[in-house]
Image (cartoon, rainbow, N blue to C red; front, side):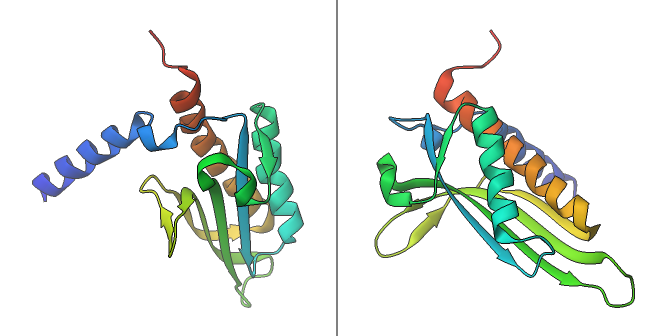
Length: 149
């Protein structure tokens, strides 16, 4: 168990650094893909939340992956199931990751921000925003040399 924990810490600390695969020729533009499966707000609400994080970071969000160099994109997936016994609560999973379109399949990169649990409507949206901010923080560090010296 101790060896497993040490390996897990090593992998996580390695992934905490900006990754070479996050670098783009045009980092001021980023494609976004948002998928909502049963969560309480509309897909448009979640798309706007992700776009808001990008705009506050001075990144122009685009919805077409083809518009962006390298076919690199940010994907947010939300999966919710309303808990009938508890009004206003959802079993929710929120995942934010980067990917690249590649023929014949898409490639998802290993740095995934994840939230899972029983949540209210507001906490699902808040969880999406926090995980998007974490992803964009890494993206900015990789593309704009923002590491503390």
